[in-house]
Length: 87
Image (cartoon, rainbow, N blue to C red; front, side):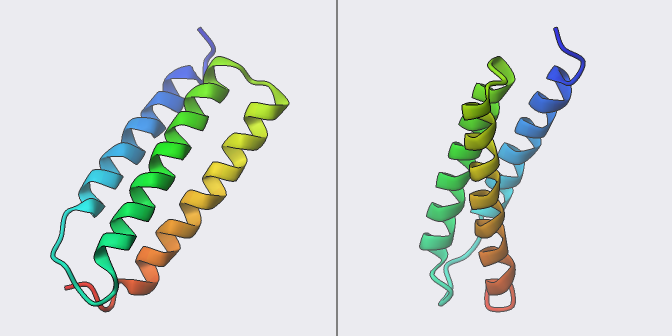
């Protein structure tokens, strides 16, 4: 088992936990449902690409993982930008 295998799964578990915590909250005018949906979708895509890359470190899987991380980061930025309006 590769040395970084456990750290990849730890990061996956942390990401899923973060998604669950951020998914809970009250509705607001910052389109809470769209934020939740976008974050769930990007988290799922990120988790899937992470597992694919952990099992096969090919260039294709690396690029998919990188793209999913960028997408997930953008969704987290949307949450941050709307944070002032979410009560």
